[in-house]
Image 1 (tube, one colour):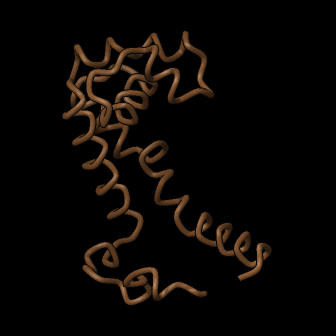
Image 2 (image 1 turned 135 degrees about the horizontal axis):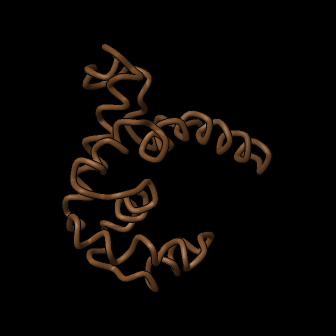
Length: 127
């Protein structure tokens, strides 16, 4: 596959998957779930949800990994977020909210266990 074709495929995959990825940050359901477990602001839920797989990471670690945010913004949310709900709850809230949002957006299609257009593995992708 040429470099141009790979770039086009990558862009097509991004267009397909980005709306699913964006749900966790911008749909109302994940935000409601973050509030329900105790996070006090959008940014607290945002950073807690993204940083949850790291455990009780501090602001220095989260800032270093999420490099495009100012330290001041990160440090207003982390580590305070962990006093409202631990990382395990943040991750559960993120999943619950994402599932709810995608179910709302996809309707009955969300209940299909194996959509026919889903590739089974790398062998099903174009060469």
